[in-house]
Amino acid sequence: MLNSIARRAFTALFTPVARLLLRLGLSPDAVTIIGTLGVCAGALVGYPAGHLFWGTVVITFFVFGDMLDGIMARLADRRSTWGAFLDSTLDRFADSAVFVGIALWYFLGADDPLTALLALGVLVTGSIVSYVRAKAEGLGVTAAGGIAERADRLLVTLVVTGLVGLGLPDVVLTVALAILMLLCSITIGQRIVAVHRQLAPEEGR
Image 1 (cartoon, rainbow, N blue to C red):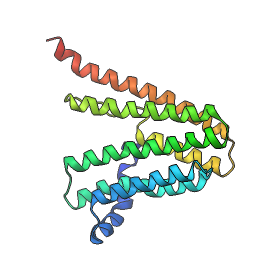
Image 2 (cartoon, one colour):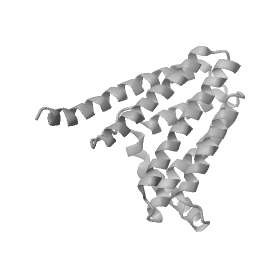
Image 3 (cartoon, rainbow, N blue to C red):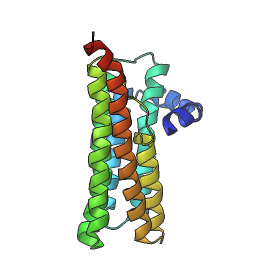
Image 4 (cartoon, rainbow, N blue to C red):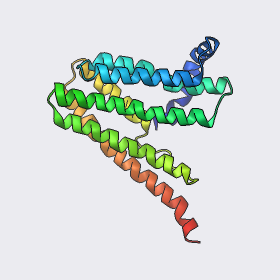
């Protein structure tokens, strides 16, 4: 949902930054890689150490790289299948780092296995959401949309985790992760239904 709502606003906001990075000689692929490494560092170093707020600050800063690379590619007219593949692949690394980092803290530091397991549950169901879309596109149909796309999952997780780092009770993150896992499961169902609607008529011919 947030992808369609916020895309224009973010494009307008970050286009000047994208132009500057291109003038400095950075390529969209380089920005993709730097952004992913930054997210992984913030998540796998900050979160397991209990620095939920500052870890979120670092992650959020580098998540913007995921927006910048696409804008840079359009400005430089470098949109390519390779760039899309690299971006999608590294997104999986970044998502995994965020939820694994949260799980490590709640398993080893906060002694809260329920929250840790829910973080891993969101990681698994979120990965399936992305897989269904990729598999559908490989079959020549579409399976985008749903109520818990990647931007939705990241925004909710980062905002709540950062607030917990500032003193909000841990149970708020526990509830947020439980809701996200439910919404991811619903999104998987929505996408499977969408694919079935597109493929079933062909198989019935």
